[in-house]
Image: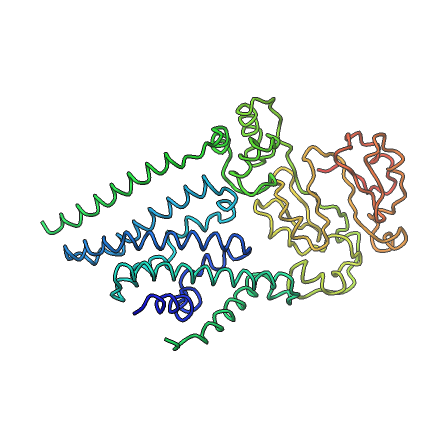
Length: 189
Length: 262
């Protein structure tokens, strides 16, 4: 499978948030502002690519000793390591973004999207470079979903909804409609 | 033997991660004022937001960085305020304790009911039907939305009117938010005198529905030596910052609307 196909596949056809419904928590939590959603997306791309770069050789090691059943715990360890790194770097270099992301930054650790990518790479029998491409593409897909949705939410803020739908319900309905629009891509590849 | 391999691999993995994080924490170290952590330790970590900042950590940072006052933490009380002042090298100030007060005296002996309300027993619900069942539309509705909002059991409905136990009240302000008529004020616990009415109607209409209502005669306004009491929207309002608690207003009030809080 060519690299372009992998990218198109994970950004549009199998969008991690809008088609596979992983990483919903930050999708709803950090999409209030376009700026913080871009920052969150960048952090997730970094964690995904780095985690894939490390988990791929680790998986080969686990395979060598036939203990692949331990892959989940090994992968989470690596992901947690990189999330901690991102947190330190952001705290030092970009304190405003660090504050804007708040609790959602350490929550990348338990973000199933990141674990989903690393395990998906193994299940799809990707090579090392294909895995990295997939990780980057999935991170980009996450960023795309977040940025798109933060735009939608900015519009929602201005709308006069019935009292019952204000706040979370309106956001949920909007998320469902955005997700619906991505169904148009299904079956292209 | 087979168990040793995974244990060894994971020990190595953990060790490498640990070393990497230690190195990174040294490289990306952010120097924080030590006092922020110290203040954070003295705060009760209730994260109530009563100080006006979003949580204890935020308040601790605000004290050090923005020079916020040391005595804003009410759950921590005077002890926490004294410790924070000590850390900051300032003179200790006591915490201004707040309590809630229901500004209404329209109990079942004074104001009549215009209809028998048999719906959901809540102020917000009864308020939908012609501003509640009592004749006075500004006062206490008497269905206890504040009672259910109170986390400390400090409010009771007695004679169809809410009464705050000043000793139990912690001044959180949840009742004031819950009240549909917004008649509950959050005021300094030291405040002695209060106006027991918030009627927005004129004198004739107020007296027609409740003998305990404020008629906005302005006698209290004239009697107050410190200019702390003003008539607004057809009832007297005390400015807590200016009030000295002399009690002249209570003496001047001919209708017994201004009284000592018990």
